[in-house]
Image (cartoon, rainbow, N blue to C red; front, side, top):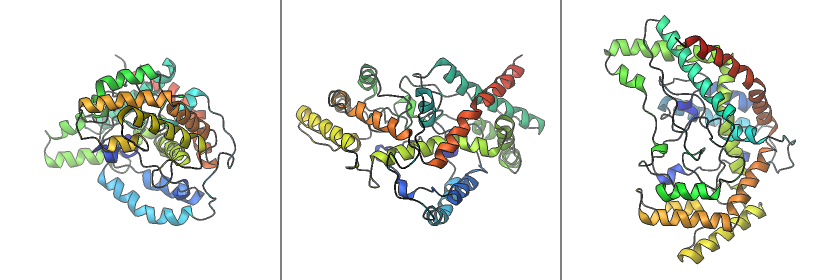
Length: 378
């Protein structure tokens, strides 16, 4: 699967941007549901330029409507399958413990592009991205077409799974953001959710620009060569990862992990779950701090942001700075980060298996990608 389908980072409005936690009990936990979801996602009608992995590279392209339609059609079947043999929403002790290292957690939630990870891990993500671009270009050239390699998106100083840094949702960092770094970011960008913030803007696709200069018949042939059956998009995935399934998991698993972590802390309606006493108490302490500082009350950061206009103002920057200070003084930031980290050590068994597969094969993929990149140098 590619990043156009897994990456959903275009924040049309503040209200739709904030992640809606997915209830664990509504997720396809049965083997049949997992297989169907993978089948629906595996033949991606990709737009030409993007990379794979919703979390690995922030700022991807808009998903195709056709893909969304296919997933929506499959949802009816998934609902039925997910109820077959499923258990209740897992508690932290409902599944075996899989203790993730800091780098493994970062990869599971958001991928390689976090500047808080090791240089080796960051380089691994870059080399996979570049290798796939090279393979796409070679394949298209062999078919008589041109493919313009896409530059990897810039990495933000504060990597985020949502496109904006927040202390209330899972982020690709093994603990809470350093407070001073978040304060510095919000002094310039507020909450970082508006189109004026460069990190939230989708990367333009140079291949779409190139195609506009071709005649309609040639455009159709190009798209068929890239997206069609045995197209270059899928061919590059197989050459790099060994199979479409492996490539699909590279994009699918981080989204599933992210949704699971949200479902541990939030209810189906998006409210903070009262069953998690530590996070509920920390959110309440944050709310009291905000009321003392501003005279206004919000249940959480999502409620605060939803009350803001869709453009950056001095008032938003002031609230964002107060929010940050309250998040750390009330220990909301630290408590939520710890809760997400703990939940990641108790993933559902199928998700553990899929994540384990990625971690086990990642070194092999990266070594292969380095050989591809080296062979393309003049």
